[in-house]
Image (cartoon, rainbow, N blue to C red; front, side, top):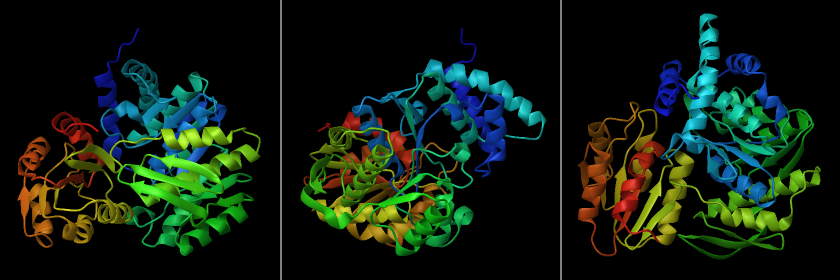
Length: 431
């Protein structure tokens, strides 16, 4: 019988936020050891990078499911429900299951506290994920890195089936370093001795050199996709059809960068298959086609066109810019919210020329930037800026102001996306 309720379990997890993003492996090692090292009884595809981790992980999960493997998926952050972070064959862990596992982990965390080993929120979530996947006898787990790679708590695992590096750009520079090369070095920390490494097809040369060097040092076979071999047959806001190395694929996630993510997933599946973990080509095709992910250039409605995108860093900003330029004509109203630690000035500078109106708002997260601060920043780049403290009211206001043929873009934060996604779905007709 469950003694801890779901809300109490979440309350305990979130109470550990006071320890911040304290990178390092000692605490997760001690926690996993006290739990019997469940992570050692699983096979993994480990996915790290700056942008595209969620999309690539989802594609890989769908590929493995299509091939008949019982597949765990560990991602972060979530959009609407915390339990999105742990899934098996596309189904989230239930609230009761999460509460039961947290109830088991909580006293161990408190014992470690008494020893001065204070596990962070993400470390506890990671340990709970390991327990969940092990006890459900998953054949494989697609494991998304939280932050960085080298010292991220997911890196407590041993050599995975593949270490997958997605797109790399500047983000969390105060923690990971202020150059692409330094950040790449941190991401490459997930590359283990004698393994397989797969790299994004359009990496910065500086980042690619670091990956090549690390893979060689760790005696890894390195597979790098080639975007020049992708023939785009059709593309619009609803996805892309393309051919790659003689095989036709359809990806429902919008933007050319999603073709790159798909190629990364394709090369990963093929590399794993070459190493004895059998994956059919038809499963790869089906998996790419089945992948959907909320709040990543998500089309909520096609008339009016309503896009929800939680991207916030330089790479995600550039992707949104290019996608809007390619697929959207007419005026655009934007509802934008940001966390305090993000570079929203660069975001506004890049995207504001595309927006006729910006409504700035806040997410229900203590790290949300003050709406007045965002307003002053946005006014440097856009003449029509409105401040609206409440995100629900911001969406309703945007709906009232939309004119025929106008597009609504909601972005800047996955936390904001989580707050307003249901409101958007309720207010606007789904495709």
